[in-house]
Length: 528
Image (cartoon, rainbow, N blue to C red; front, top):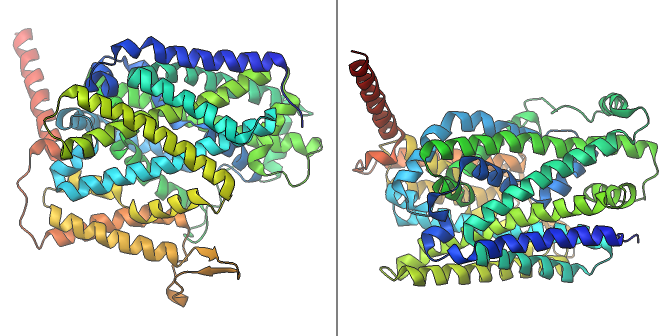
């Protein structure tokens, strides 16, 4: 096994030291829940935009996207491409809505619109999915670093994990955002440098990369057939629509960023900037995989190497001394920037959605203390999940967490859309829609996923011709549609709710028109 040069280790150590120093830099300012979770609403828009970029691009992107580009084509990018298309149409009213109607938690909106069950369901979904994600990020990062440096994998998980806990614990959301700014630039620079080196390491240069990749079917977003049973362009596009709505309309890690901006317009600009940077960066790492495919057609590659291990192998064997350290620092930065955000937002949800409900009207200092304890507990929990995942393998503990999330967290975007656009929908109807969604998702998952209990893989629920046979990404479409359709129809059997207009798109539109009319009248008065 090849190990790094001392210069590379020094570069990585400096990068980690800078990360910790940023946490220490903002530690003295964290004296209230408002500063710890929302930075007092003082962050400039460009910094929030870079923070969104760094939050959405983790070490999963750094490792998995090149692996997909190497083994397939660019079809997984379709989901990301849908994000700006949807966001441009919705962000203008989502941001002011949240900044007006919630204090800290995204899921406060869900309760105001549909009652406590909707809030608990959606916040629990956030908690489960982000614990799953954090375990995956820790695991992939530790595995890659261990393979490239010869370090102990468990030790790597714990060292990086404790560093991230310290940064988040000390500096709050302000440290998270400014650290994300630094790490965002590192990610962009690291990706560009890697692609440049790969392209010019191929015989024939960039032109040959494109030509050979096209000849081997590595370019494009197909297959383009209308087929829901396998991964097609249509499946990814439909899934991407709801992914965009769920991520930017209901995910605490994104919505909490809206609250840190100085103004509504600043929050909107930050969101658009984040997306317009993130999609090209996803594309960059996908194309790195494409270029690696061409490179390793011309150079020998060890047998039985997994696609997600190809990029780390290239970094370790082909990059010059110093550059390897910089790229690995960017890989670690990708993990830190994603995980520190998750920890702060999990603490925000824990305080706002749970502790405050059971312990109302307590001093703010108590809520801040509880939030910091949640940061520590969540961080240690994610480290333990990653450690257990390492011991249990791919069918281990994290697989169980993914299973639970796929069953119990469906339909969140559906709840949001129903609440936003239908004044007729009520909590009784929505609760029926959520229960229908859980039943459907459970059926679809159990009748399409085979488990191995020692005697070969078998379905837990085998209904023959009635089994769910479509691609699992379609669950991310159907679950939301079921909540919308069933929730709306069921609402017709219960009284129409009395609602605050600020909770509805129609209320935002009415306010927007009045403000526009008032501005026009003021301009006419001024000109006369």
